[in-house]
Length: 375
Ligand code: SF4
Picture 1 (tube, protein in one colour):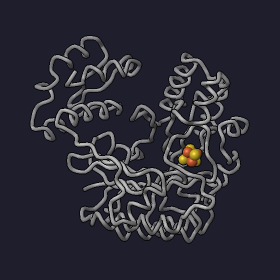
Picture 2 (picture 1 turned 45 degrees about the vertical axis):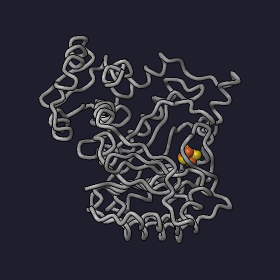
Picture 3 (picture 1 turned 60 degrees about the horizontal axis):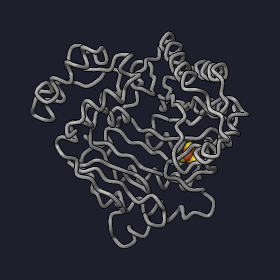
């Protein structure tokens, strides 16, 4: 079994915090992009069924109906699908009945919606176009489609001038929607974003580190008391609604990545495609795969990744899976490090799993450094 990520880089807006590969949709060669994307998928001749499919962006929901059908048909014709999880990213306000009908027809069963906050003043300040009503209207429209069984909301906290009370109001409103999954991300100032520029000029007032931690801790307590469990550092789900595609990343498994800026992990290589659309199209037009960078993952790098990614999960790293993948028990590679971190109370061991303690989560980077093999 394998998985696939498909990137649609077009957006109707450019959010002030975003460093994903994306471009304003207006005047872009969308039809050419979708045709090229199909060609790229075809080159890989994927035979193994994909357990999870994920169409992300950018904003895939910004495609019109004709474009959406072209995309979904290509994905389903080029990539064998096991019938597992098929996620499509949406922005509030983008989905009409015709688009929802297409998503259902082509087997999409999970939607991930970028809401970020319910505070309309903040939405404008972070460069989003939608409003609260768009979120409610979109969710109302989705209700009729019984095959879409999982809907997740993305929220961002520690936004400029955001107070703890404001974040609490957003999360409470989200919880009232009764959805099975939330992703909560602390704002990160990424290079070459509007926010990073404002911050450099001293024009961005962010909550303090203490306030950010208080928001995170409050959210965990609030959600866990109501049945959503924190199964990964930024993700909360009801039992059985955890994102299978994202778990695949944290389990350090192999996957295909398609589209401008897409990346994949096949065999012992990670690869990344050209992000600028024109570079992506030009490579494919020459009959070449649009890969800009490949990295051979050595055995020791793969072991490190298995730990770093696995420790993001609340459940942690499976010792059995580590041994099965590397034909070597984890203790043989990391015995003294594990004993030391257990003794310091940063790591805990339960049955087959090694995971971070609450203290370990706070000092995550210090823990990860200990697992580097070529220090
Ligand atoms: S956050 Fe999403 S919608 Fe906003 S610019 Fe980035 S990819 Fe586009």
